[in-house]
Length: 174
Image (cartoon, rainbow, N blue to C red; front, side):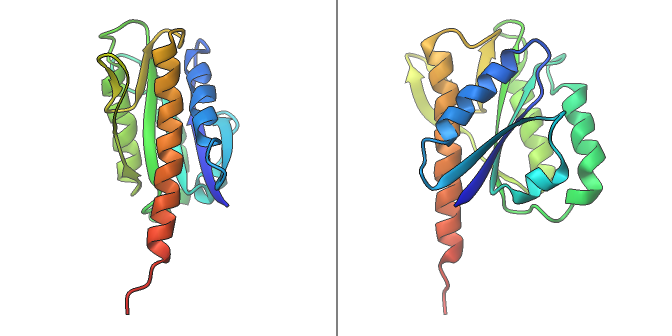
């Protein structure tokens, strides 16, 4: 059984709601065991155990929250060089459209890349002109079905990639 962690920070509860929908997508895959944790609950061992991670943060001045950055700064020594090749993706809620949530996803992906995660975007459209190239994004809480679907799709894709990566890494060439 593969492990996927949905790890988030939320100020108002909007990113927490997104995380719950991402988690719903993760656990649709019967080959994956999902975990849902806030950064207040998580420790480095949670990341070590995970084969994949969906990382969520509210948008804070166009980038990830300082609390999320602090979390990664503080566990760096425990994880550095030990999580290479794990799969990661991002999601974010902002105060309004154009508030920087795609930039926040990119800053979350940058954190993951620095730790050696393989990151991805999603080219699927979940509604007319609504896709999640950099990750799932919402303005405020996810209310509209397309916003909920984007979060669920992100979780589904993460689980799929974790399973595919694991199958690929089990193949031996002689």
